[in-house]
Length: 275
Ligand code: SPD
Image (cartoon, rainbow, N blue to C red; front, side):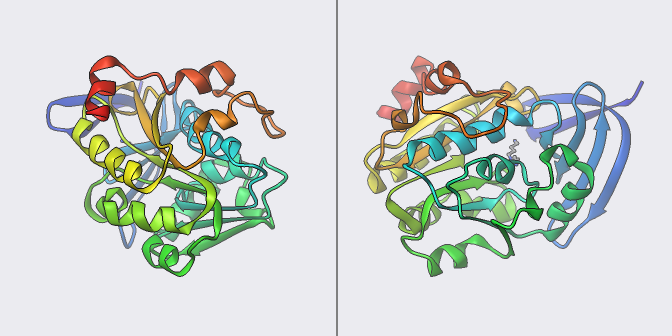
């Protein structure tokens, strides 16, 4: 029997996992970084008290944030991942033989180092010659690289503290500017019940910047509300990627039916977004 670890991201809602063992616990230059062994969910990364990923359910997050934009674009070659220091999104992106370069812009080198040590299931994507790690803030990098990327994946923490800027109109403008005209981006975009207003604001930004933005959702039991959504940001419609062959490797979460259904939104939320 372990001890209960309770996440308190929202003042009115709590969820917990049972922790068997603490594998790492340190204060990095930027945040408190914990890796624990949890019952059922396996190895789990927690940043500043918020669960980021578990071995058991991360595939829903990483497959959906990566494959939806990757499939929508014709033969993606250059990919940028903002955040994503755990390597889960990078692993999915590198499955595409067309990808020549996948740049990961991660602020906290310790996230990368400890993930390499503890999340061997990601297959050490950092060792791949096509992967390039930049330990720096993404804003400056986006500013320096207009029109460079086929796909951008913003794989971030929640909009708290230093990550808050990654949910701003300024960030979305820079991100779209860094995309090629027929490129596509997907961003971590929170939870329809808890974050309706934030998502609506981001959707309005995305609509002002691109022709075919859309919100989609994945079930992840260890995130608040049992799941998380993503903003698809592109001139290319998301269904361009539907029914295309998946890259070599085995999917655990996405299939054509899940891909399509992920864009079906509950009525209160669909109405809010479109109003
Ligand atoms: N509320 C938790 C949101 C976590 C999103 N970040 C996940 C990072 C996985 N690469």
